[in-house]
Length: 263
Image 1 (tube, rainbow, N blue to C red):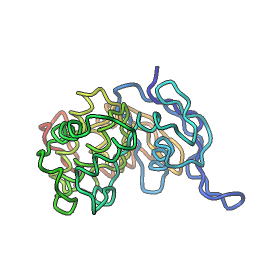
Image 2 (cartoon, rainbow, N blue to C red):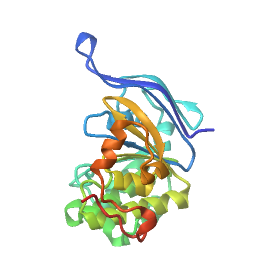
Image 3 (tube, rainbow, N blue to C red):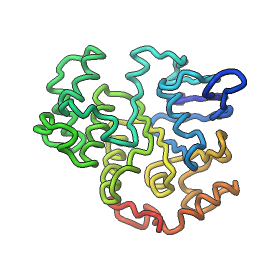
Image 4 (cartoon, one colour):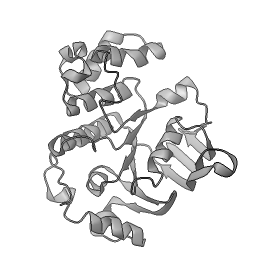
Protein backbone atom coordinates (compact mmCIF):
# COMPACT_ATOMS: atom_id res chain seq x y z
CA UNK A 1 0.00 0.00 0.00
CA UNK A 2 1.30 3.46 -0.90
CA UNK A 3 1.90 5.91 1.95
CA UNK A 4 0.62 8.74 -0.30
CA UNK A 5 -1.73 8.31 -3.26
CA UNK A 6 -2.85 11.35 -5.24
CA UNK A 7 -5.28 11.18 -8.17
CA UNK A 8 -6.17 14.10 -10.42
CA UNK A 9 -5.20 16.78 -7.92
CA UNK A 10 -6.26 20.21 -9.15
CA UNK A 11 -5.66 23.44 -7.20
CA UNK A 12 -7.04 26.88 -8.03
CA UNK A 13 -6.72 30.33 -6.52
CA UNK A 14 -9.69 32.65 -6.74
CA UNK A 15 -13.27 31.91 -7.75
CA UNK A 16 -15.44 31.88 -10.85
CA UNK A 17 -14.09 33.49 -13.99
CA UNK A 18 -11.17 34.95 -12.01
CA UNK A 19 -9.97 31.55 -10.78
CA UNK A 20 -6.36 30.73 -11.63
CA UNK A 21 -5.72 27.00 -12.00
CA UNK A 22 -2.22 26.44 -10.65
CA UNK A 23 -2.11 22.62 -10.46
CA UNK A 24 -3.84 20.68 -13.24
CA UNK A 25 -4.88 17.09 -12.53
CA UNK A 26 -1.60 15.60 -11.31
CA UNK A 27 -1.43 12.01 -10.05
CA UNK A 28 1.33 10.15 -8.20
CA UNK A 29 2.07 7.62 -5.48
CA UNK A 30 4.80 7.59 -2.83
CA UNK A 31 5.80 4.32 -1.18
CA UNK A 32 6.58 4.05 2.53
CA UNK A 33 10.20 5.06 3.14
CA UNK A 34 10.57 6.65 -0.29
CA UNK A 35 11.69 10.21 -1.04
CA UNK A 36 9.67 11.66 -3.90
CA UNK A 37 10.88 14.90 -5.43
CA UNK A 38 9.02 17.71 -7.16
CA UNK A 39 11.27 19.85 -9.33
CA UNK A 40 10.66 22.74 -11.69
CA UNK A 41 11.10 26.45 -12.05
CA UNK A 42 9.48 28.96 -9.68
CA UNK A 43 5.73 29.26 -10.13
CA UNK A 44 5.22 25.84 -11.73
CA UNK A 45 2.96 24.63 -8.89
CA UNK A 46 5.24 22.32 -6.90
CA UNK A 47 4.85 24.13 -3.56
CA UNK A 48 1.11 24.32 -4.17
CA UNK A 49 1.00 20.51 -4.42
CA UNK A 50 2.83 20.34 -1.10
CA UNK A 51 0.38 22.80 0.48
CA UNK A 52 -2.58 20.69 -0.61
CA UNK A 53 -0.96 17.54 0.82
CA UNK A 54 -0.30 19.34 4.10
CA UNK A 55 -3.85 20.63 4.42
CA UNK A 56 -2.70 24.26 4.21
CA UNK A 57 -4.48 24.81 0.90
CA UNK A 58 -8.12 23.77 1.09
CA UNK A 59 -9.31 24.84 -2.36
CA UNK A 60 -8.48 21.68 -4.29
CA UNK A 61 -10.19 18.87 -6.13
CA UNK A 62 -9.31 15.26 -6.82
CA UNK A 63 -8.38 12.51 -4.40
CA UNK A 64 -5.69 12.41 -1.71
CA UNK A 65 -5.16 9.25 0.36
CA UNK A 66 -2.65 9.28 3.21
CA UNK A 67 -1.66 5.95 4.76
CA UNK A 68 -4.81 4.31 3.39
CA UNK A 69 -7.21 6.99 4.67
CA UNK A 70 -8.91 9.56 2.47
CA UNK A 71 -7.77 13.10 3.29
CA UNK A 72 -10.35 15.84 2.87
CA UNK A 73 -9.47 19.54 2.58
CA UNK A 74 -10.26 19.86 6.31
CA UNK A 75 -8.06 17.39 8.19
CA UNK A 76 -8.47 15.74 11.55
CA UNK A 77 -5.88 16.35 14.25
CA UNK A 78 -4.59 12.79 13.79
CA UNK A 79 -4.17 13.33 10.05
CA UNK A 80 -2.27 16.55 10.64
CA UNK A 81 0.04 14.80 13.10
CA UNK A 82 0.75 12.03 10.58
CA UNK A 83 2.54 14.40 8.23
CA UNK A 84 4.48 17.52 9.11
CA UNK A 85 6.08 20.26 7.04
CA UNK A 86 9.53 21.91 6.99
CA UNK A 87 9.64 25.29 5.29
CA UNK A 88 12.24 27.12 3.23
CA UNK A 89 12.99 29.98 5.63
CA UNK A 90 13.97 28.68 9.08
CA UNK A 91 13.83 32.17 10.60
CA UNK A 92 10.43 33.10 9.24
CA UNK A 93 8.85 29.76 10.27
CA UNK A 94 9.88 29.99 13.95
CA UNK A 95 8.30 32.50 16.36
CA UNK A 96 11.03 35.10 17.06
CA UNK A 97 9.90 35.76 20.66
CA UNK A 98 9.62 32.14 21.73
CA UNK A 99 12.54 30.15 23.09
CA UNK A 100 13.46 26.99 21.24
CA UNK A 101 12.01 24.99 24.11
CA UNK A 102 8.71 26.83 23.81
CA UNK A 103 8.68 26.29 20.03
CA UNK A 104 9.07 22.53 20.52
CA UNK A 105 6.58 22.45 23.39
CA UNK A 106 3.71 24.00 21.43
CA UNK A 107 2.85 21.01 19.16
CA UNK A 108 3.04 18.69 22.19
CA UNK A 109 0.48 20.87 24.00
CA UNK A 110 -1.81 21.09 20.97
CA UNK A 111 -1.87 17.31 20.57
CA UNK A 112 -2.01 16.56 24.31
CA UNK A 113 1.17 14.48 24.47
CA UNK A 114 2.87 13.69 27.77
CA UNK A 115 6.55 13.48 28.84
CA UNK A 116 7.16 16.85 27.26
CA UNK A 117 10.58 17.73 28.73
CA UNK A 118 11.90 14.27 27.80
CA UNK A 119 10.53 14.53 24.25
CA UNK A 120 12.10 17.97 23.76
CA UNK A 121 15.48 16.81 25.07
CA UNK A 122 15.45 13.73 22.84
CA UNK A 123 14.44 15.71 19.76
CA UNK A 124 17.23 18.25 20.24
CA UNK A 125 19.68 15.37 20.52
CA UNK A 126 18.27 13.73 17.38
CA UNK A 127 18.90 16.84 15.27
CA UNK A 128 22.37 17.43 16.71
CA UNK A 129 21.71 20.39 19.02
CA UNK A 130 22.86 20.71 22.66
CA UNK A 131 20.24 20.41 25.41
CA UNK A 132 20.81 24.02 26.57
CA UNK A 133 19.63 25.36 23.19
CA UNK A 134 16.09 24.99 24.52
CA UNK A 135 16.67 28.27 26.41
CA UNK A 136 17.87 30.23 23.38
CA UNK A 137 15.89 32.42 21.00
CA UNK A 138 15.95 32.07 17.20
CA UNK A 139 18.11 35.19 16.71
CA UNK A 140 20.81 33.54 18.81
CA UNK A 141 21.12 30.62 16.37
CA UNK A 142 22.71 30.32 12.94
CA UNK A 143 20.59 29.57 9.87
CA UNK A 144 21.56 25.90 9.94
CA UNK A 145 20.77 25.63 13.65
CA UNK A 146 17.36 27.23 13.11
CA UNK A 147 16.60 24.74 10.36
CA UNK A 148 17.55 21.92 12.73
CA UNK A 149 15.01 23.36 15.18
CA UNK A 150 12.39 23.45 12.40
CA UNK A 151 13.10 19.79 11.64
CA UNK A 152 12.90 18.94 15.35
CA UNK A 153 9.53 20.70 15.61
CA UNK A 154 8.23 18.74 12.62
CA UNK A 155 9.44 15.41 14.02
CA UNK A 156 8.45 15.84 17.67
CA UNK A 157 4.95 14.48 16.96
CA UNK A 158 6.51 11.33 15.46
CA UNK A 159 4.97 11.74 12.00
CA UNK A 160 5.41 9.18 9.26
CA UNK A 161 5.70 11.77 6.48
CA UNK A 162 7.79 14.93 6.13
CA UNK A 163 6.84 17.50 3.50
CA UNK A 164 9.97 19.50 2.67
CA UNK A 165 9.59 22.83 0.87
CA UNK A 166 13.04 23.91 -0.36
CA UNK A 167 14.53 23.03 3.07
CA UNK A 168 18.11 24.08 2.21
CA UNK A 169 17.77 26.90 -0.32
CA UNK A 170 18.05 29.68 2.30
CA UNK A 171 21.26 28.23 3.78
CA UNK A 172 24.95 28.60 2.99
CA UNK A 173 26.37 25.94 0.71
CA UNK A 174 28.41 24.21 3.44
CA UNK A 175 25.40 24.10 5.76
CA UNK A 176 23.13 22.72 3.03
CA UNK A 177 25.15 19.51 2.94
CA UNK A 178 24.85 19.08 6.73
CA UNK A 179 21.06 19.50 6.65
CA UNK A 180 20.61 17.13 3.71
CA UNK A 181 22.70 14.47 5.44
CA UNK A 182 20.73 14.99 8.66
CA UNK A 183 17.45 14.51 6.79
CA UNK A 184 18.80 11.40 5.09
CA UNK A 185 19.92 9.90 8.42
CA UNK A 186 16.58 10.68 10.08
CA UNK A 187 14.66 9.19 7.15
CA UNK A 188 16.63 5.95 7.28
CA UNK A 189 16.52 5.64 11.08
CA UNK A 190 12.82 6.48 11.52
CA UNK A 191 11.60 4.91 8.24
CA UNK A 192 10.11 8.23 7.17
CA UNK A 193 8.52 9.08 3.85
CA UNK A 194 9.56 12.40 2.25
CA UNK A 195 8.06 14.61 -0.40
CA UNK A 196 10.74 17.14 -1.31
CA UNK A 197 10.18 20.31 -3.33
CA UNK A 198 13.27 21.84 -4.90
CA UNK A 199 14.44 23.72 -7.97
CA UNK A 200 17.94 22.31 -7.47
CA UNK A 201 18.91 19.13 -9.31
CA UNK A 202 21.88 18.53 -6.99
CA UNK A 203 19.58 18.40 -3.96
CA UNK A 204 17.11 16.17 -5.81
CA UNK A 205 19.87 13.78 -6.92
CA UNK A 206 21.30 13.58 -3.39
CA UNK A 207 18.09 12.70 -1.58
CA UNK A 208 15.32 11.50 -3.92
CA UNK A 209 14.47 8.05 -5.25
CA UNK A 210 12.07 9.35 -7.90
CA UNK A 211 11.23 12.82 -9.15
CA UNK A 212 8.28 14.46 -10.89
CA UNK A 213 9.23 17.29 -13.22
CA UNK A 214 6.60 20.06 -13.20
CA UNK A 215 5.91 22.70 -15.82
CA UNK A 216 2.91 25.03 -15.84
CA UNK A 217 1.00 22.99 -13.27
CA UNK A 218 1.39 19.54 -14.80
CA UNK A 219 3.84 16.66 -14.53
CA UNK A 220 5.72 16.46 -17.80
CA UNK A 221 7.79 13.49 -16.63
CA UNK A 222 8.23 11.19 -13.63
CA UNK A 223 11.64 9.59 -13.62
CA UNK A 224 14.19 7.96 -11.34
CA UNK A 225 17.28 9.32 -9.66
CA UNK A 226 19.36 6.96 -11.80
CA UNK A 227 17.93 8.39 -15.01
CA UNK A 228 18.71 11.91 -13.82
CA UNK A 229 22.31 11.00 -13.04
CA UNK A 230 22.73 9.29 -16.40
CA UNK A 231 20.89 11.99 -18.32
CA UNK A 232 18.49 9.42 -19.79
CA UNK A 233 15.32 11.50 -19.51
CA UNK A 234 12.54 11.77 -22.05
CA UNK A 235 10.94 15.22 -21.95
CA UNK A 236 12.66 18.26 -23.50
CA UNK A 237 11.92 20.38 -20.41
CA UNK A 238 13.62 17.83 -18.15
CA UNK A 239 16.62 17.92 -20.46
CA UNK A 240 16.64 21.72 -20.22
CA UNK A 241 16.69 21.55 -16.41
CA UNK A 242 19.54 19.05 -16.54
CA UNK A 243 21.50 21.20 -18.99
CA UNK A 244 21.06 24.14 -16.65
CA UNK A 245 22.54 22.18 -13.77
CA UNK A 246 25.63 20.87 -15.55
CA UNK A 247 28.58 20.63 -13.22
CA UNK A 248 27.00 19.03 -10.17
CA UNK A 249 28.74 15.86 -9.13
CA UNK A 250 27.05 12.51 -8.77
CA UNK A 251 26.66 11.44 -5.11
CA UNK A 252 28.52 8.25 -6.06
CA UNK A 253 31.55 10.36 -6.97
CA UNK A 254 31.81 12.43 -3.81
CA UNK A 255 31.90 11.95 -0.03
CA UNK A 256 28.53 11.69 1.67
CA UNK A 257 29.38 14.79 3.64
CA UNK A 258 29.47 17.04 0.58
CA UNK A 259 26.93 18.21 -1.93
CA UNK A 260 28.53 20.21 -4.70
CA UNK A 261 26.47 22.77 -6.50
CA UNK A 262 26.00 23.61 -10.15
CA UNK A 263 28.70 25.93 -11.42
